[in-house]
Amino acid sequence: MAFTCTIPAVPTQLADDDRVRITRWDFEPGATTGWHEHAMDYAIVFVTDGLMAIDVDGKVSHVEMKAGQAYSRPAGIKHDVKNDGGAPMSFVEIETKR
Amino acid sequence: MAFTCTIPAVPTQLADDDRVRITRWDFEPGATTGWHEHAMDYAIVFVTDGLMAIDVDGKVSHVEMKAGQAYSRPAGIKHDVKNDGGAPMSFVEIETKR
Image 1 (tube, rainbow over the protein chains, first blue to last red):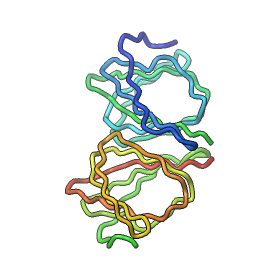
Image 2: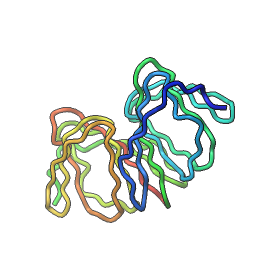
Image 3: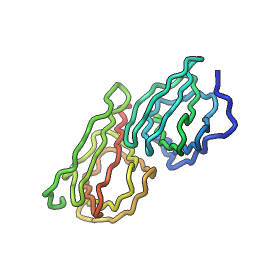
Image 4: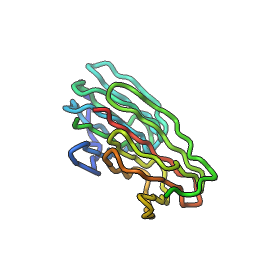
């Protein structure tokens, strides 16, 4: 189930070549990506601190992230991401093509 | 040719799985990675602003980076990276295994 989205997170494409697609996501407080699934494996690097809520199949987790933290995830997991904090939150997503 | 390295940049491994290896690099002012070459394609995400000097085969470029900027590079290019600014600089490196 997705979060109710009244504010969309804003994607900015930074690179797209034969190896990766790189997108920065900027979230105002309360903003969400909307329900989505990655066709490619991906990594996330936090550029700001942030309180992130993630909904995976209706199970919501709250994670406090610090700028410079990062994680890797496989393709194919449906999820929704929300800025659950009171300040703008940004991360960069690296999707790997091979 | 490498930069003269009196201060080494500090690597911190954030993830290492079958898809990627993720490393944060923290540079004090003047710190360098030392001469190196990536065996894997990789992407760089800046976590801080920074004035970066890159030496590729003796050709030095100076690049002003902003937090949240990113780029992708192929494996196999020998280079050295230096924090050429007066403040600490950090980026996260994502090396892709496939």
